[in-house]
Length: 579
Image (cartoon, rainbow, N blue to C red; front, side, top):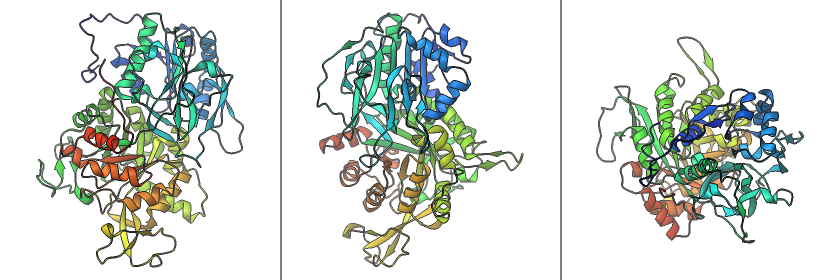
C-alpha cells in the first residue's frame, strides 16, 4: 500500500515480516476501509472473516463496530458470529481489538433501542449496560478529540504519551461499576460524566475511541497492539494508581473544507467561490484575488497536506453535485478511497446525498444506498443539504410526525446519528423589529457591528436549497431543531452573507442555533484569521469551526489557529509525533 505519508521510522532496524495476519470482522456497516488502511499502514496483512468457522482459527481479531448497537448485534446473530465470538473471548487469552461499537457489544446490554423496547443483549463478556449521555447536560453525540486517564499501563499504549488526544464519536457510553472496574484500561470525562474509553483484560482489548481516526496517535495504538501480539507481551497490562479527581477535556475542532468540482477535462479540482458564486463556464486556471472561482490543487494531495498540518477533520464538499447524478459520481468515490489510505482523521463528504433515478436506465437508488457507497469508499459522515430543508418542512407540515422515510432518518437508523451531518445554508433577512417577521421564524437581535444596510437591528435566517439559489420560507433554527428530531447528529452551519468575506463567523446565527439544539454545531463561512476561531469558540457554544479559503491560500496556518486558541484558554488538539 501507499504508505509514504506515515513516516513510521524503523530507526535503522531491518523490519521483519509479521508472523500473523490480522482477521478483520467486517460485518458490512459503515466505514471499515479506514481500519483496513490503518492496519496495512502498520505493516500487517489482513484476512477477512466471512464465515463463523474462521473465528476460532484467527490469530488476532479486529472488530470495528460502526452504526447502531441493535443492527450490529442483529447482523452478528444472523451471520452466526455471536457464539463463536463469545467462545473466542471466553478465556481472555486470544488477541482481540474491538473499536467503538466493537467495544460496546462486549457488554451485557445496551439502551440504544426504540422507545419503550427492552435493552438489547450484547456479547456479555464485560459486566454492565451501555447507556445514553444525558442530553440535558451536554451536546450528544460526544464528537471530537478528548483525553484519556490511565487505569492500567498496557503495551498497547507503549508509543502514546499521556497528553495525546484521541477521536471519539458516540451517543452511548459504558459507565464504570464495581463489577467491571478491573476491565478499565482508560477512562475519559465529557462535561463531567466519566465513562470507560478503553478496556483490557488478558489479551482482550477494546477502545471507545477510533484509533483509525486518531491521526498518528491512533496508528501508534494499533502499532502497540500488533507488536505486543508479535512479542507475546499483550497480556502484561498492570494496574496504576488513578487520580480520583482527574478530568479530561474535549478539544474544540478545526475542520478544513475542500470545495470540489469537476473541471472541463473531467479532473476533480478544489475551488473556492465567494458567496456561493460557482460559475460552471469559468475558464480553467488560477484566478488571482478574491474575485472569481479559483482552482486550488487536486483534492487528495491538498487533503494530505491538511492532515499533516494538523486538521482535526476534513470535509469534501461536492459543490456541483446537484447538477449530476451521484452514483455515477465515481471521481468523488475515488477521492475518498485514495484519501483514506494516508489520512487518519474523520472525513465528511457532502453533496448529492439523496435518492436518485438514473435518467438513462430508470434505476432508482435511495439516499441510504447513496450514503452506503460513500461510507464504503472511506467517508465517516455524510452531509445532507437541500434534502434536510425539505425533510424539516415535511416534518412541520405533518404536525411533527416523522415518517421514517427521510434520508436523515434512514441513514441515522442504520449508521447512527453521528454519521449524519446537516448542512444549513441560510441568508439574513433584515427586519426593523422583533414583530416584523412571520411568527414562525426565530428573529435574532444584532449588535451595531452586524446591523443591516438600513441600520436594522434584527434579522431572521432564511434557509436556502440548491446551493443557495432558491430561498425557502423556513428559518435556520427551525430546520436545525427539526433535523435533530429526525436523527441528525451534527450541524454544519454556513451563512451566505459571510461566505468568503474573511470578516469572521456570523456570531448571532451561531449563538441562536447552538443554543436551540443539543447536537454539536460546526461554525462555517467567514473565517479570515486566527482571531475568528478564538472569537466563535469564546462567544458561542459551537464545538468546531470550519474554514476553507484561508487555509487553501496559506494566509493562515492550522497550527496558528490552535496556538491562538490555546493562548486564549481554548483546548485544541496536539497532533502525535512520529515514533
